[in-house]
Length: 134
Image (cartoon, rainbow, N blue to C red):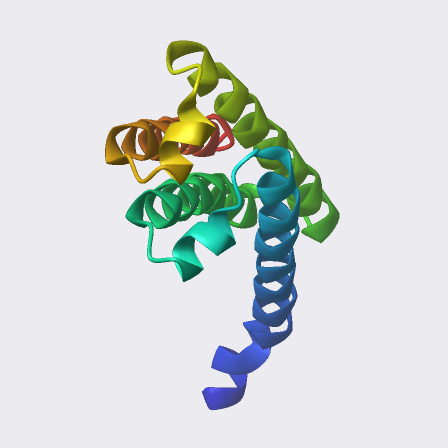
């Protein structure tokens, strides 16, 4: 019984490691694209940096989780994770249209732009995740 339960462990480890790697890559790319330094803002206790980045990461993790659940194999999952990353980057630039000085305002400690960006990211992530449930 236990061995039967553990039969899926290799797949779990593979998909979990891929997902963790995707999150790390996402954070590296996303934080290089934004003009403000999210991790520096977090170290300086600026809540907007944590809100924007944390919700953005959640917005990315939702479609990655959907890709894990619905992909044909690990390569398929990796491809859909890259697509989710691209969607989140597009969302950042689209969110800036409504709030042109968004990065400067987040860095200055304003919460409204951070919440706007974070919730735009989560919204896009939900839509991406649902779209991957073919």
